[in-house]
Amino acid sequence: MKSNIKDIAKSLDVSIATVSKALNNKPGVSHEMRLKVLKKAEELGYVVNSLARGMKISRTFTIGVLISDIKNPYFSEVISSMERVLYAKKYNLIICNVGESSVKEREYLELLVSKKVDGIIAAPSAERKNLSIYRNLIRHGMKITLFDRLIESIEVDSVVVDNKAATYEAVRYLSNLGHKKIGAIYGIEKSYTGSERLKGFMEAVKDFKVECRPEWLQNGEFSEEKSHERALDILKQKNRPTALIAMNNFMTLGIMRAIKDLKLKVPQDISIIGFDNAEWMKVCSPTVTTVAQPTEAIGMTAATLLLDAIESETPRAPHHFVLKTSLLKRESVASLKKERATP
Image (cartoon, rainbow, N blue to C red; front, side, top):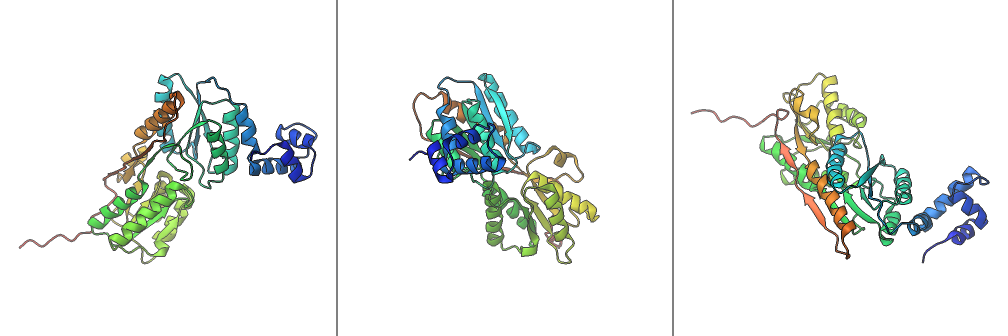
């Protein structure tokens, strides 16, 4: 059953006028009361419902894009590919930098609906607290395509990479080169990418019978600074792993900074496998072995899926694409295999 202003007013024991002023950001309501009204409106799903009712049938040729970190080169590359596809069809982009905040995500979703966008391409925030908003938007006809991250309970078009296979293959590569003590800096576990990459790593550790002590497995939260701190903790240990795997590009950089701070050498003292193919990984010395995501294909696929959904005259079943990553083998991994003696 859909909620309305009366429901909000009744649940908070205030007047309908107070609720209306709070929702429309008008004077006459305290900041504290406005927050209470907004929170209750979110719980009841009213905010999105009211915005959705105002959506136009006619197109605005505008697409909203939600990402978690605009500073991350991965997202820049993906958006660049999206833009090429959408520009060819005369669509404009509104880019929203969510920063893993469910509050900002909700506010940006509301903004995009108020701007009458024709569709949304989203990498949802890690906390996944806005499921009801996404569901309400879909119910009211908003076309949504997810990329990079999934929300399993929402049936919309999506394009992701096989994150589990990515880290699994990284461990396999190290194991084949004789590494039996492997550590990792992983990302936000609540996020789809963080969870899947960690699962792939743990499965490979078990399958290839390599050692990974709890102190060698640290949460870097997809942050360069956090990963720098965690890598220092690992690398200062007397018994440390022979290789470390990072699970995004910022965390790779954090590990490399820690190695430099401790005056260790790559790959002589520690082997490194990064994630994403940032430009600096190609030119630093040694160059960094890394898991590369097909950013161009991700962006183009996501944009094409959304355009198809917008322009389709009849409803269709959601399309789901899982793309493969590739392991770019460079100089940051040493072989620990013992050479066979020549007879």
